[in-house]
Amino acid sequence: MDGAGPRGSLPAASSVLAVCAHPDDESFGLGAVLRHFVDDGAEVAMLCFTHGEASSLGGSDHRLAEIRRAELDGAAAALGIGRIQLLNRPDGSLAEEPLEDLAGEVAATVDEVSADLLLVFDEGGITGHPDHRRATEAALAGAPTLPVLAWSLPLDVAGALNAEFGATFLGRDEPEIDVVVRVDRTHQRQAIACHTSQSSDNPVLWRRLELLGDEEALRWLRSPASRGRPGVDPVSDSLPVSRDESHSSLAEEWDRRYASSPRVFRAEPDESLVELASPLPPASAVDLGAGEGRNSLWLARRGWNVVAVDASVVALNRLSDAAEIEGLSITTAADDLVSYLAEARVAGTHFDLVVVAYVHPDASGRAELLSAAAHSLSAGGHLFVVGHHVSSLGVTGPPDPARLYTEDDLRGIPGLDVLRLEQRRGKSDVSEPGTDVVLWARRGAADGGKPSSTATHAP
Image (tube, rainbow, N blue to C red; front, side):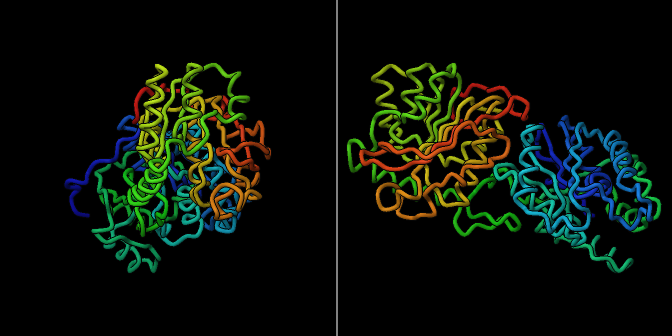
């Protein structure tokens, strides 16, 4: 491989989660890079979907799954991996497992270790292995707001291995590679030696390490600058419409709407929020899609430290004026909601209360937003969601039924315990009565959320 040059540094990370299909993937493939992160001061954890029980290299020992678990423990110690989450998904048929289930396991582990970066195999699985490819797909789907870095092979190395061994390695040309980093393979080789069942007769592995020398190639599947954007193809990261463009268009639309009237939505706080949040001690809160600030103002009056996030500068200015009149302090951020939460998470900021009131993206945007909201909660923090029910179509809310809520849309958010989920008939966010859906959920204290880092300014 060529010299590392200007791309020779790993990205800064405090907690790295490697998502793999099999025991030994962390050593044979990611080992040198994982150890580099450890040496740089990062905490490193691993999520492995299978026990690798179907490997043809382990012979016919019926205890292969048990053997490989023990080998993984030794390899993790050699690499400095602090935590292993080893699951019992079927080896050899991971691609047949529901992606949403695998993604949920990724999301839960991300929360448990407070990961701020994921490390995976390249989306081709390096050799095209369906299990490797599925693990990477699950990582991308399970952590939509986190950057994802993929271990890759240079095209010349892949070509040499394919020619010598009749293998199916998938290589990357120079322009496709984002980072080339120098590595020390001492700990990787120690970890490989722990996987005796898989490494004792593996000439392809040793030849690959020889060809790579002291360098590894990596590419961004989701870069820090692009994480969580709607419309992103998680494989190519190409954008038909960027989040910046989408946010700008949305901001212009809402600015026009707010500017057209001195008051667009009713001034009273949401009655369910008042009921559910009143018993909580004031702490840190973020109001997503805050608009003119009826919920932010109520929380601030009760002593909460509030960040109000909205696309519309006109609405936020109206909110700030109202806060100033009352002598309240509310931080405002004119930003895309998912982008704001992603930046807050990278900055180490978590919230004790997240409010999502009458925010109506499409189905994929809704799932992305709710996942990001759940990830931003501190341990024991609460998520409040209210939105127009699909039965309100034509009465109130957006005219697209796909943007309206059902109870099922709010079930099963990873890492959260549902405390209340119900339909509600009432004033809604406007004067016309309508039917809404209300969710009140809590992140468990043992689910990996950090204690809140009070947000006093927009990250």
